[in-house]
Length: 437
Image: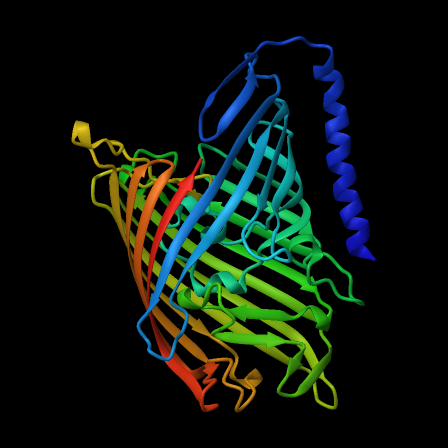
């Protein structure tokens, strides 16, 4: 099976890198120092020596829904993660993060990988990590100014086990990532039985004016992403969610191996591509993306083969009210750092940022099963979010999102009389506190 062979290759790659580094460090004596810099660290006084860093995230939130048919108003733990990172030697770095939130079945290792710095701009990465796709997905959670990523996130590849080359050139003018992956999600969570072929994924971002003297355009970038994989029908498991549906059993659209035409017995390719653009100048930034997902050759029993096509796009704008700059580096949006951290005794209260987004999803109507009311052909959402950055590690977010659905979605069966409640719109407010240490 390709997955097993590929996972073994990835593991062997990591092990060989670690073994190769031991002779370079074991015979050297060094002094260590401790401190805090985006995590608590223990490191050699020699910058080329070993380093160990500890950190984590705790995000707590409250959701309120405006629809009386929803029974989902709740407190929730969005994140409860611990991470370990560092370097064995200056050209060999590592990162591991574990999610403690959720049931025992949901607790898992989110990232675990080793970076081999081949040259200053290029690194090779092996392990489990984010596939190189989409500005929004590559940007860290801490720099996302909304409660959730857009609906296009669910059409994109996520974390997977694989090997990747990535880097940047010419004063951040070009940034790229390209890799080969199992294509079955975190730790092969949805692996199939037959077509065990790899997924090829790549992303290229260009800042055409980065090296010029045109200050207004230095932070303008455009990019494109793509991925393709020969799939097993049993691994089809698409679940698109709106902001208010995250963490619940509800979905905007569902596609799996059991469809309105019966069980899908054969499948050909899963292909994705995305286009993106972003611009930042001082405290202002705008961004937008288009994401396309297509399954080809889906053949249910006693039916002809058909394709399933989905796409989504969003446009977003952000303004740091207190004047802190919003910047783009390495093909992603950077974290906002308050220039006047929260200290009331000194008359400083951190940074405030306002963000607006319009978000749209179109699902293939041919695969919606009549009468089930679990999928909608279209969803249109608008979000407004206020972010308060007390410190670089502390943030409070308040967001309101309104989503309209072209088709009603079943939300619950009334236990008293057996009646069914539906929604064709969703209004949700999210209040979140984030601690990243």
